[in-house]
Structures are given as C-alpha cells and as structure tokens.
Image (cartoon, rainbow, N blue to C red; front, side, top):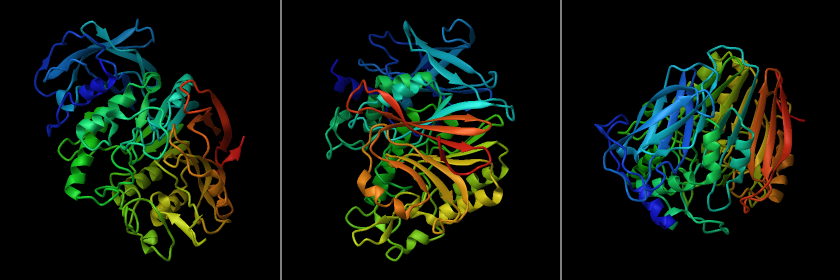
Length: 518
C-alpha cells in the first residue's frame, strides 16, 4: 500500500471523544491481520518502584474495528522472554486511536524487565522497561540521556540509533518530539505526513504515526524506558498556555490545542490518570527518584506559562528581542515560566529532597543570555527564560536558600550545546553560582548562527561552552561523587548512516556547582 495512504489510515482510525481514558465498554477479539498491527513499535515509561506504563498502538492499512480491541501481553525478567513473570490482557481503546496505556504494578523495585504484545498471530518486538529503585535505597551509579527537537523533514534520526547503542537506564524527551509545520525555508531529506501543517486530531495522529515508524526512533523506544515532556512544536510554534503564536481566535486555538494534547497522550507511555479527557489537560510534571542518588523534577514548560512578553506585529506572539527599556514585562514579577502553581510545586519538592543529586528537567535555556539588537543595545529573547527573568530569579534564589544538593538544570529547544553556571545575580560576575546548566543540541533541527552567537560570549561570562553547528544528544554518567556529561554529535544528519563522536565532556563534582571540562 502507498505510504501516504497507510499513514492517513493510521491517523484517522478513530475519532475524538470526551470519555475518560479507561476501558470503554466491551473489547472485541483480535481481527485477522494482513499486516503488522504493531508497526508503530512499543515504548515504556512513567516508572515507579513497583511498575511502569507500557505503550503500543494498533494500526492497519485495511482499517480497524470501531470498538476496542483486546490484546495480550507478557513481561519477563530476561530479554529472550523465557522467564515470564506476568501475563495478561490489555485494551487498545478505539477512542484513543487504538492506543494502549497499560499500567503495571507489583513488580520488584530497581530492576529491568522485558515485554511484548500479542494479537492473534501477530507479535510486537520485545521492549525494555525498568522499575525505579525502592525509595531511599542506595544507588551508586546511573546513566541517563536527554534529547529534543527532532524535525523529520530536516534530517535522519541516526542520533536515536547511537543513543540506543549506549544502553542508558533512562532517556528524557524534553520537547519537540514532532514538528507540526511544513518546512519551507530549508532543504528537506523527507516530507512530513499529509504535506501540510498539523492542526486537527487526524493531522497530529498522522504526524506521530509517521515519526513512530522511523526505525531509529522505534529502536530507541524498544531499548530504553522514557520520561517525556513537551515544548511548543507538539502544538504550535511559540504558543504558551491558551495563546497561539499569532493570537488566533482563542476558541479555534483551544480546539487545536485539545487535538494536539490528545494525540500526544495517544502516542506516549503515560498513565491514563494523567490525561483529563474533558479538558484535554495532561499532567506531565512529576518527581522520579532513583533511590538516594538522584531525583528528577520533570516539568511542564508550556501548558501553564504566562504569555510571551510584549507581543509585536505581525507575528505578535512569537519570540523576539526586547530591551529592558522597550519591554517592562521582562521584569514583571507576576509572570511565570512554569505558571505560579507549578513554580510552587517545584520549589516545595526542592526544599524537601534528600537525594544526592537533583536534576530539573525543562525545555530550554535557563541562563541569562545577553544579545545585541540592530542598535547594538543589550536585548533579551522573549521566548525562553530571558523573557521571564523574575521567575528565574525566584527559582535560583530558592535553590540557594534551600541549599539543594547538587542542583543541575537540563534543557533543549535552542538547537545547540551549552554548559553554563547559573548565577544568583547574572549582572554580577562575582555572584555565587547556585546551579549547573547543561543544554543539549537538537536531533536534527538547524541551530542558531554560530558566528553571531559567539560574538555575544563576552557579554555572558557565565557561559562556559557553546556550540550550535552540531546535532546529536547528551549522555550523562552519574555516580555518588561526580556527574560526567558527554555532548555527542552525529557526523551528518542528511545521511541515515551517520557516525557518532564525543564533541566535549564536562564534569560536575559532588558538592561543587559549575561545570569543569574533563
């Protein structure tokens, strides 16, 4: 069958509903498959000490039944699936594009498991999941990685394949898992589904179905359990909360955002309790503790954020440069990057954590970044933390006052590698460094102009490293005494067989803030 037709059928196999994500009515038995119903792969995520969430989504070029479909699953303690510890059935819900969000409980803490789904004579590939260690258990080492900004049109996802080869314990997806628009400015290596921007539920489903069929992304999901948040391109470039990037009709944008959020839920290993089918809100922010070694505060940087500062014509809500004189909103203390409620949630958790290392996972550059506008005046980009300086100051002041152990902020979005010292007062170079920041480059998306940005480095002495010409991911090895971070870059995103190399390595020592080149 023609690929475009197959993707269209995958995206339109079910319609939206306001019912809660649960087992809706009776499930039918498996149909007779003429193709692989697990062609979108499998994934595991949302871990807990006694279990996790397993995901898949059924698709068929011949269409699927209108109702729910019951499928089987197996969980084993070995990759060959011989030591089965759990068997059962799961439901692929028609209301959610025949996706499965299977919550598993009652397993042993702190160990890997393998799983697969079956339907009739069809069987999915084997995937790997893992439970969190028991609360407070001693953990001596952990490897995790973080990725962001994978534009299907711009390049191949070879970075995902190389990351899977590293066999990390966990990968964090920090936003722009898909891109909603159609690339019109740069050469493309492959086309987005439907060849038009995703704005409807069917459009977003098609886009996710296309990305999920990428072999490198499928392999990563089958190899490594995940934590996931989002940024803007899962909905609309530069949107915040209920505001679109162009301040379009709020009712129409609310419908678009609801469709985008539902499609995101349908394609991620998230607990059904995280998704409110009536409001279409998804609770992504949560804390994940790896024994006494690490606590990850996973945040939601879009759903509750204050609108961008000082919107301008013609784009109005898109990110742009402003000076402090031209935009008083840059220093308005009522505005918040996370939303005030989530901001308090994050601070409360940081005040109570007893972990040796504490990672704040969010979407973009947190450090102050002074740029120069066309008049050579110091300016700030409104679409990252520089547009929410008081919110950033509150968070860093709290980290300092609470004496949070080994705080590290990770992010993406800016399509470049950064290693920064997060200062209590960025305008004073002698101000204390209260946390370390590590920002990963994009999987494929083009970075900012390297020559232009390096000219700004003298105005930003807290930036220890910047590189925007490379694509790839960030890999972190954590022990009780140090965090070793490797910026990994692929040779060429335009080639599916691109090789991998380590661009730069940094170390953070236990009890010391700030990065040091290894």
